[in-house]
Image (cartoon, rainbow, N blue to C red; front, side):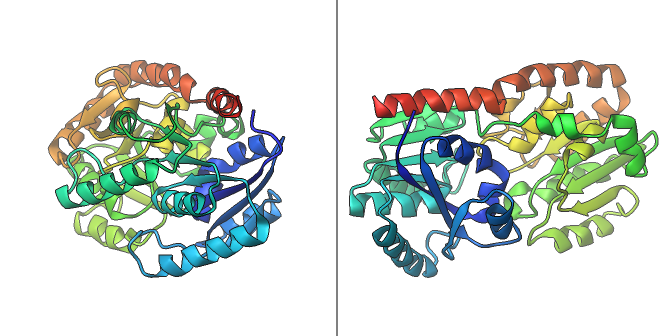
Length: 370
């Protein structure tokens, strides 16, 4: 186990720490002093300080690595290092990974990097893939431990010069979400649901989540007793509300915005739907699997890793509106199939538990210290 280190966790945004990293930071805090640096993008930054007593540093990183403000952000990061003398960098996300490894190179500090989905991927833009693949390959030389969370990314980095490379089972799902969730009947009652077939998506409203395709598939099922519930916020939310209205879905879609206890919504749902263009390893999918919910998802990295087509759900090509509508319709019409696939989802979800992921990380930490 890593011990007696002064660790700086670098993420692009505060939301990343809030959603995914709190258990991992607390795990490291057992034996180390851990501080975090990120951009402040919402309530999460102050909550991390006040609720979890994390020592937070604010630097206004841009999510796009080529934004000029990242030059200023890097200078501020160097100043932070000079003032605090961190002796281990733990970087996350593409920009956090870029900043962290440049910092590690400059000050000759050991660096961990968790790739939550490389910015290049199969089927992506050739120019973008070329640029990001080569940036990641170059930065790997200054990475002591490179951690990936899906098969495609692990395969991509096998020949890079990071000192050690690993694949783990995602970020880990906390079963407390299930324990704290309301029973299905109560959760549905609270949402004003009766006997509707409930399709759920939990995802930020950004272009790569591919909401037009998902709304298009729901529109093709307008004759069915279906309710599409969406949890999330983001820059594309108002555009998607307008698009849903244009498709005549006002009585079919519920936009709930940000939901703190999303487990209640998962408890009420019949199927989870995510047609993203790319993911790292979709935590919302794993959480729904933990509730025994079948999955309909796109055939992309980070989603196909979690679905055995025809076993715990269905996989379609990312823009196949008709294919998604067909699979959702089959699940809507066949309660026995939903039950069978839901049981498989629950069984398959166990490897992604937070306890299992912590165990995998502890082994990595032990090898780093040995």
